[in-house]
Image 1 (cartoon, rainbow, N blue to C red):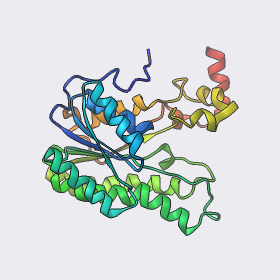
Image 2: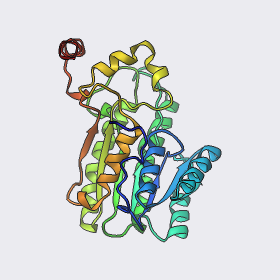
Image 3: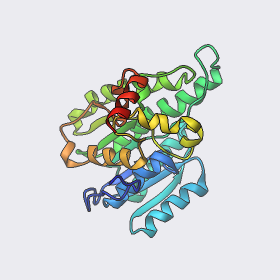
Image 4: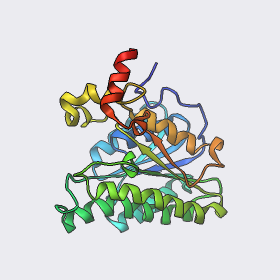
Length: 271
């Protein structure tokens, strides 16, 4: 049975004594990833722009027996990024795993997007991944991991999400470049590319199309933060030390469907 609890399938002590920084972890996928690492024994640094939700997530993790602290940081501010890593090192001595997850989007086309839209998305979703990694690897021992959270939009996309969709493709390239550079230092770098994930706004965005969207996923459902968290915990584990430079889709097979209508008819015929 599929569980929406990101800690349900946690491997006890798999990440014990590891220090994990998860950007944009005050809610949604980032929160799920933070909870999973904490459930597997890691000390987790929760980060985000909003203090109250971040403090609440960290407190909840501690109440569940995990170790977590919150550091307020705006990923558009290079000084705040550096301070985040400095705080982590001062608190825990190092960074073993960095999960670059913070992300925003605008509903604009390439012709509609403004320089402000461009800066908002690129600085949050792309530049911060580089800067966080640049500072974190200085305190990352051999065996460390960088995980860059992208999207299935890196492979196939739709109109009206520029520059978000362009940036998500860029993250895959960023991962390849980092993997080549950091591999000789014993650090792996991979991208996770989620598809539709049910977070706070998903049902509202899909509206009457929710059931239809489920039916065009081969597994018959949308993803959850737990699905993404499970992949993150695996890629940062000792079982994945020979995996680097990869961009891994976590989308329930959605990207393998060529014609939605025909696939929906197929599913209806076998169910």
